[in-house]
Structure formats: structure tokens, C-alpha cells
Image 1 (tube, rainbow, N blue to C red):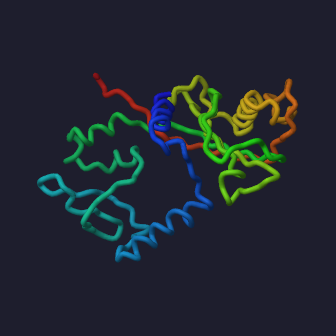
Image 2: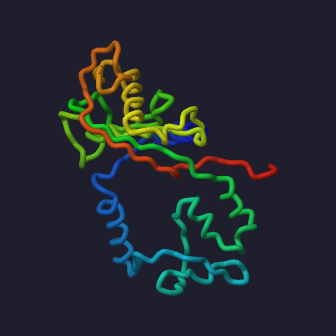
Image 3: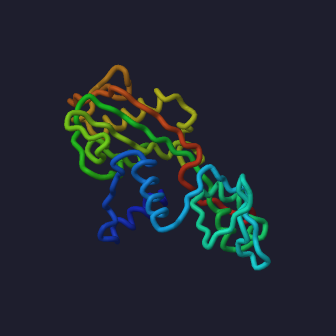
Length: 239
């Protein structure tokens, strides 16, 4: 809930905060490749398949060099984009007691489930990311409206974030351990409750059975479990 309130506060207070955008294709081609081209056009070099094994420090605790698979390498500037749980394992001993780096001890990765749903009809949708009123579905978007790669005027493809999905993430049910079918059925039930004029009653998904005049039926689905996705604040021992 803290994450949702923080995001909503930013959307409310920033003029363009509520605007969202989606890549018009896959990340390697539409995000990573242009970044590489930008760097190389300015004389930079991108090293692939060169994982960082350790960070070595100078006496003043600045970085001396990185140890890669094929040897040591030093650079002008260092920026880490590693997930917190991975970065915790990389932090050198000389940094581990520094107040700045101790802050990462207060973050812990928690699970999230991403759900992709394909329907046989076009749903009423908007071009943007939507927050849900459901206790199970955090945010969602109709990618057939938002993304060129999935564009369609005849059928919708929804992407949804199913969260919280475990007690560790603040939920009451350990959904991440349940079958794809149970997760999709719960999702379809929530969509039917939220949009009774859109989602059809379907015996394949018992949670959708009941009142409502919707006609859109699910044709395909995919469930992607991410054991450590977003982060929760945790207390230090003894604090």
C-alpha cells in the first residue's frame, strides 16, 4: 500500500506524472540497442558477457577496479543498475558499515506475478496504465491499445500485475505457489466483478459465473512469476 500511495502522490503533484508510455517492441531492440548505439557513437564501448565478480576499493574507499571474468578493469565513473538483492552480495567489505550502503539492508525483494490475457473481443480501454480497484490486481493496461506490437481494433490483450501475491508481500494468500489455472481464475473473477458488462460468464473460469452481460472470453493466457521483483522495507534486527 505504501508503494501505491507514493506513486499516487507523485502522479497528483507532477503535471506529467500520470502519463505513461510503452515500448513499441521488445526491450533488446527498442531500448537496449538504441542505448548501445548512443554510447558507441560517442566513443564508448559496451562489454557484454562480462559479469562483475567483485569490487575492489582504494584506501579511501573509492573504487579501484572491478574484477570481471576476463580480468580487472578500471573506469572513470561507476553506476550500478543491479537489483538490490544482487547488489547486496556485491557490496565490498569496506562499504558494508557505511551509513549510505547500510540503507540497502532495509530493502528486501518480494514476489510479484505478471499476467497476460488474450480476449476474443476488444474491451473498452484507454491508452495508458491504470490502477485497479481490485485487492488482487495492482495495475493493468490493454496492450492492444497502448503498444504498437500488440495493436488490434478487434481483440484485447491485457497485461496485469497480480499483487500482493504472498504473505511476505502483504497478502493473505500465497498465490505465487498456486497453479496458473487458479491464478487466472481469480484474475478473471476480479475482472468480471470490476467490468460486468465486458467479461463473459465462462464455465472454464468458475469465478466468472454469475450475473453480467459481458461477452468477451479468454482465448489464451500466460502467468509469469517473479520471486523477487519490487522491494519492501524491513526492520533492522533490534530496531
